[in-house]
Image 1 (tube, rainbow, N blue to C red):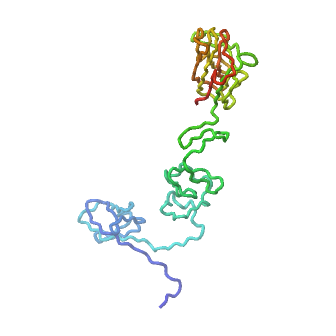
Image 2 (cartoon, rainbow, N blue to C red; image 1 turned 135 degrees about the vertical axis):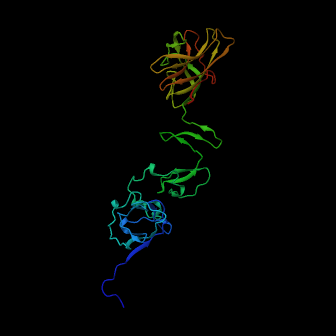
Length: 351
């Protein structure tokens, strides 16, 4: 017949543990179906030894999954049985919001217990995941917001018009831009490097060796002993073929270094019919410091009506230093002419 009144709760659940073979020791392992068994306490066990029920604590204690008798047993002793009282099984139903963060043990929730797609971006606080918390290789290409399929020799680039922010682009470099967003360098399909803004000057045909703002009477230190001369002078050119960056000043006859670096300077002074020690010099004037002839060429007199005196130098200069072609005014001045190609001079930044 049906039960009248409140339904009885689930009954006690008692467990018979595996048999134990005694020996000359007081400590024995507790197992259930050959698996270590940890009871709640000594009082939860019923132990019969040699037909006599033992008193918990007084006759035995429990440590983890072992039972420890008050004195060592012998092989003649018999543990008749050990029964553990587990109490009624309880199917817990928790009210909402009853489990708080403080109740969850540290590291109790592992990645294996978190379902796929359970935690979404909205669940994460801003800046809660730092670089140090990411495992190497954890962010794969599949996890990036990229909307096209990459091919070999492509790289990720910024994409301003799309929400994804990244897209694949060919690795070939169309141009390297400077901080001013101007093209500073290009590498073409034949691997040739072009630097359109590289400081460079090239001119021919001297049109003035004195007067105006041309530098003159400069003291130059020409040897290790500090020997100097005070008659170095510059010149201007009639035909300027290239002056990238406008660093050459044709009024003063000097090239001002825009940045620190190594500069190549070339100067071929062509004399026509002069006979008093024709010469050519490349000068390096340190900004706020001394001036040095870093390359020079001399002749005591002319072997012919047309005599070239080429000089070349590589100069390690600082920004605002000046590099310039020169001659000594105590000797014959370079020949002024209108013919293109004579008196070639070039200055450029190597890097």
